[in-house]
Length: 305
Image (cartoon, rainbow, N blue to C red; front, top):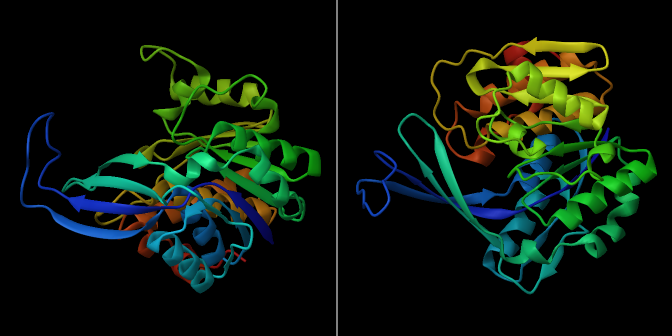
């Protein structure tokens, strides 16, 4: 199975803090750690660990962080031949994680701002050769649209992980086969006010109505809702002993969903497989260490081949 990914790479500079500081406040007693991240790279690595042949497109800087990225992709078996070396610095994300495992993130895009529609065109063959193309939104919207449009033109299934969320232009919705927002992102995508008053079921129905395809609303510890032409089903959350770090859960979910769909699994099975991958991720600190291998998931939920 082949998966192409268009998205971000960046370095996560993570501080675990006793509590997240209020505006103007300094909180001491934290611990610091640095590691690779970016939604696109995480999803590419996650899919490769689950057995997919993965081609990845992003933009990085001509700096130490960029060099480390290329080494990482080689080690993880991700094809990074199309990755662009831009004039800006490699993206950096600053992450605060509180004792409960919840996080908040601030991003300096750097090189990613140079990724546009012209950057995506040389990746057309990789998208066309894939079973599914996964696109996330830490990159300029023009690159997001180009990747989805090429996928549509090539007959490749498109999956949009719409994070960080913004209201999507009308012309983008018909290019999306699968969309996977969380409860916070979904109203933003739809252009709804914060007090929109819709239930989760109404939100996922509205999302599917825009795409005509599949919409999955992730709900953290409450599981997910998955909707397609056959209706909406609830995907139960998997219980874990202790939540350590939620940072990689969404990317782990997206990677596993893409793999399962590329394997031809029905929506309920694909979403359950993705939920298991997301649950695995929250039990381990750090994004890359938390992305499961196929054998790790098989040992948890039984063989899925």
